[in-house]
Image 1: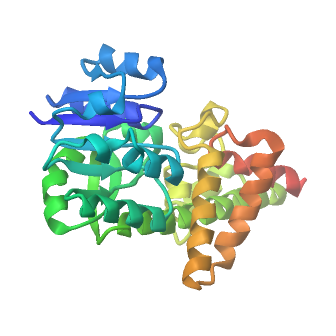
Image 2: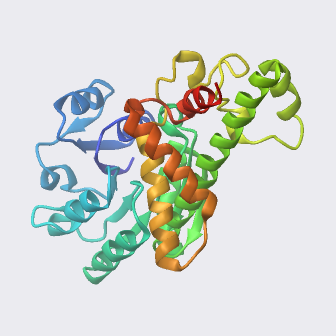
Length: 297
């Protein structure tokens, strides 16, 4: 049994922490939402009233936070993790943030004698609940080896991507692919509608041929072909359009900073910006099909 502190018990962090409890770990959580804390307690975990109390005695601290500024504050602020961290503990940040912040916070942690991993995830709320997440991990090989047994409890695939910041780089690149491919699949179904091609027929063909991709076979954006996709529950989110837009913006910031050309990624960001600005930020990102289909009419 490992003593783990888990900071950030939202839609992703909550079920991730609960899976750690189910596998016998001693988990103490902290979140500004009392309801989030109550859900962890109901599953057998514990909560604390502050970050300092949550990390007291912890061997591993895991964070799942909304953005880079929160990560920086939670780790380096006066009341943050590094100010109260037990010696020898391992830090794992599972938030999706910009590469520069991930590297700078890891550097501050290293200066204070702590190992830190950036370990963003793919798989959405469904993956968090089912413990089938993919972890993309940046940091030293030694820290990764220590973290891997714990990450295995929460995920199905755990990959050491490289040094600090590499996990975030992998997540940004992966989700740029995802955003672009979801738009492409949605455009194909919208075109099929206009051409009088049955949606199921297109799925049956493309899912077994060169059009095959995750956005088609696992997360199909039209109702029917994939019963578990959000399209069959009115696009209630597993992964919101707002979160996709956040990741696409991160990809474009990284592209600009590195001098990379990503025209499709940039156009995908523009499309999701319009979708979110039209009041759809809380829908699943596959709901972009609605906007594309409407534009085709």
